[in-house]
Length: 610
Ligand code: AGP
Image (cartoon, rainbow, N blue to C red):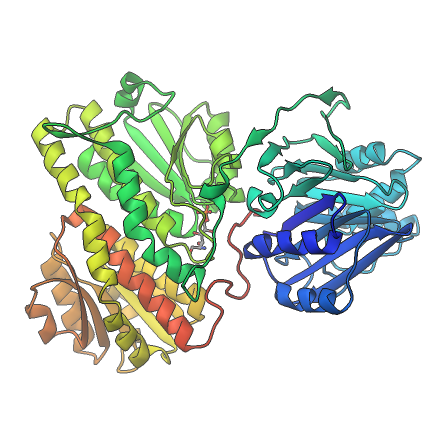
């Protein structure tokens, strides 16, 4: 949930660190800070709030030195304050550390260190790290870091600089991402590749328990036994990774508008155009024969990815006739699930770094189950720890609210389900051809929706002052209701609930009155008439209905106060189209409320702690 960066080289250290922190800010922005070694001193600047506050300070008071580290924080322990901002230091201010993760045994470590007269200045868990290194330092910083690692329980990626060995950065990790960027006469560490792209595309992914030692001209990596290991750097495709806002006012809006192109490219990657449309083979280590034997799928994910998985449940059960469970990862990992038989566990994650989803994968592998993951970020922890990965190729998604990754997950789930269904002899060539034809029409239909987004702006204008919203859906669009509610609440801070429409009469209907906007996903479907009845129930209690409906549906106007029409499409594909007006509604309401759409309060793009 935090972003860490380190630099050793000839350039202006604070400038390089700040440039990296700008690329990492989406990971957390409660506070930020940098530390450098300069004239045998550790010098530090910190700031509360968004990174711009630190940038303004450094503008006035630059901070350069031989080596430096930086941090942008999403608070886990200790509120955002100058004391709790990183970097954190030891008693004598000769060791500085930036940390991403959670140290679960920090209280017991802190008590022992205080008994040994260590002076603590913060309420953070991270502050135990520099004090442990100080305690163990007897002339070899790497050894001291190794001993500190042995004491720590939990997850961590941290970087250390010290006046004791002023020309190097030492870094290590466990369960949290950390990369090393290899430059010419300069080297970097970072939480993710985006932050080092400005200086290098040659990177090494540090593995758990390894220690990296960086000087200007050398990078050494030691395994958990202290033995030096050779690691060949990989070269990242910088173009695929760079992200800028272009003409858009926010990354979120840019990413909403990128969806037709992203989906189009994904289809071109997977759909073969011959006499019949067919699917290219998925590049999986599980054989088609093994896959065909799978009788149960467990999908585990968080947030928007969980909503995508929920749609996946409907699709897999409809097309593949396999029993499909959908689990929230933080529940899955602790509920001692029954994991046996011909079961495939599917993890869905945009970032590939969500701690709970990683834990779910590890739980599944302990039960010797195959794990297939849908991931956006290449080389992420989930990608590396799964038996198979289907990359969704959505490109970098910077806005904290997930949009293009969600619809890319849905398309990937559709294509995989059709592939899986074919392996099970449940779909004929002609039927597969017509389903793929329908999928091929989606990007154009998405564009039609985006072209009339002004209608959503009008609806947002009418309802942006509401204090509560309810989103209702049925069947494959019940997850759409959940997703619409999440989008709204996470960027507009309006309380919003997604609900199965048929469930309203069992209690929540008590909430309906003339002040409550109710978004109803009422597109043509096998449960359309049922949705109309639910809308009647809402109308009878003077609820304000905003309907997402299918073009040509006149009946809906008799019930709804506002109607946004989407193009006709098969029921199973409708969540992909429905997502767009719901994303735009949340976006425009948040803008009208004057909020920071790309970096909403209390949130971060990647939840790498549990
Ligand atoms: C979605 O808009 C949120 N940003 C959040 O719920 C997110 O989907 C969730 O944290 C899961 O992230 P992941 O897909 O990277 O695992």
